[in-house]
Image (cartoon, rainbow, N blue to C red; front, side, top):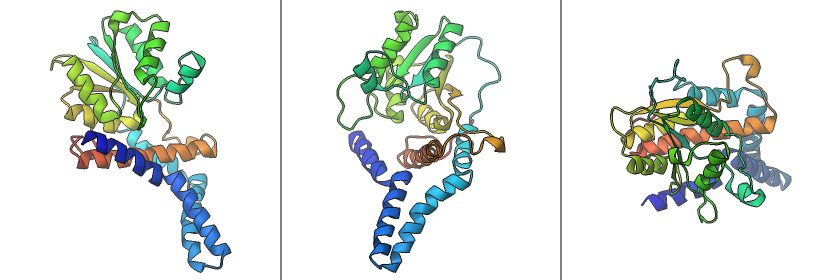
Amino acid sequence: MDGVAFVASKVLWALLRPNTLALVLATLGLVLVWRGRRFGRWPLTLGLGWYLAVFCLPVAAFLTLPLEQRFPRPAAEPAQVTGIIVLGGAVEQDLTNAHGIPALNGAAERMTEAVALALRHPAARLVFTGGSAAVLPGGPTEADTARRLFTSLGLAPERLVFESESRNTHENAVLSHAMLAPKPDETWLLVTSASHMPRSVGVFRQAGWRITPWPVNYTASRDPSLWWYGPFPARLNQAEWALREYVGLTAYWLMGRTDALFPAP
């Protein structure tokens, strides 16, 4: 059942992701209008309207802010940390394999913050959870790339734990819990992008974890001067990522994978 849900989520998102869908609608509408079909104005308006709204209005910031501010960073670090869990999604397996050095993407703060925390808490274990999100897996996993990165930065191998079978956030939580069997009195920090934290916390709670959120990789701010920060393509991607999180939260809640529709502290 999990395999079917995983493949279905990939296929549906590929078809319905907002930026792609808007482009398809605009193209379809343009062709229909060119051929004299007046009803083509509707898909053309919808498609171009999405791009125009993101360009002219702070759509990306307004969609992202509720996600990123749901779980604020703790005012102080816990004195004793049992372990640091960092979710996959920040490494590029294919580029790592092609060039021979660990390659990171825009979510690189997940990895850098995890290493910084590990250095500040030398007794804590550093856990990376992430396999491959490809429908047809093969080749190196995210955990393989994380292993190369962490060891190259000087972290002792005996502190490191790698879970390499998970394909999504639900499996991150379930498989890492089965591997580590955390105790109620232990302190585990969860490191992931701030916009991804609500869904991650809900899933980890449902899997039995008592987790302390440690968000990173912020992309939005309350400061209006930063609402149009970054080039237009970056804001398009930001808006699409936020919508993906809302869709994921709803789907996980309907499937019973999270403890709430919009998990809160």
